[in-house]
Amino acid sequence: MPEHLFSEISQAVFHTLLYSDVFDYPLTASEVHRYLTQISATYEDVWEVLNENPQFIKRGDYFALTGRESIVPIRARRTRRSQELLPYAIRYGRVLGCLPFVRMVTLTGSLAVMNISQNADFDYMLVTSPGRLWTARAFVLLFGRCTKIRGHTICPNLIVSTDSLEWHRHDLYSARELCQMIPITGKDVYQKLMQANAWIRDVLPNAYQISNISETSPGFLRRFLEFPLLGKPGDRLERWEMNRKIARFAKQEGFGDETVFNTQMCQGNFDHHRHWTEEAFRQRRRRFREHLLPAEEGIRVTGR
Image (tube, helix red, strand yellow):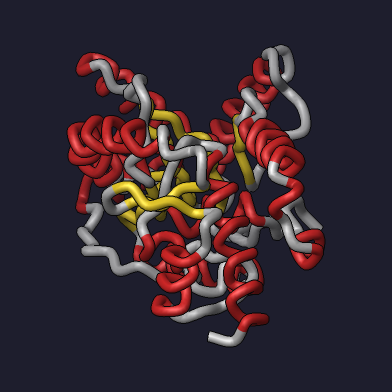
């Protein structure tokens, strides 16, 4: 491999491992290749860099930054815990996909990458029919009361309507979230979601793809429950539910930059996970500044 190409890929690999290090999450070679940042490279070239650059260390099947090999057993423990919970999350997701006005369900968060720590919170992104986002959310929360009996908490952290599929921020955080999610129901809507966010190719060239879903029919029950809520009574219920929830959220700690509540979106990121991730990533970049090449300064982490 030419020296300039080796250097360029090394920088991208370093950037990729550094981002995952924020979550104590070493990567396999195939994962490094998949989430390689801003450049496209073959798996063979990535493998060569991983094995020949002393900045990277291999433990078992995983690669990490040199000096950070302690995160390998952390991932192993979290993978085992995630494997126990994933079947429940998929099963619950299929039920969510059958609820009124829900048109797509994907599993997101730490469980989607098999990196769950201690809690059993299941994070989902939902897409709903236009004008019925808050009604759909109410049905989701009602189902969530049932899952709590088994000690499982359903968190619909992001809900958008089908007429608001494009992400407003085109950055690494958003690209990783979109590419890491596990689609469960709503094949057609999921395909539209990924097509509306084709900008991902510019950030993660190897990761942009549209996964397959084994689609199941929502059945008669969803159509039966939706029917009386399609007209003006449904409109009044939607407005009432939205207004009362937004009024309550506005008083909740953490309400601010990463919380969005309107007719097209319900994003309840009260713990400001995006800000935490970007700040932790910036701190790591400063800590490893001596290892970074000048070209790395051009990599955009935050949004446009």
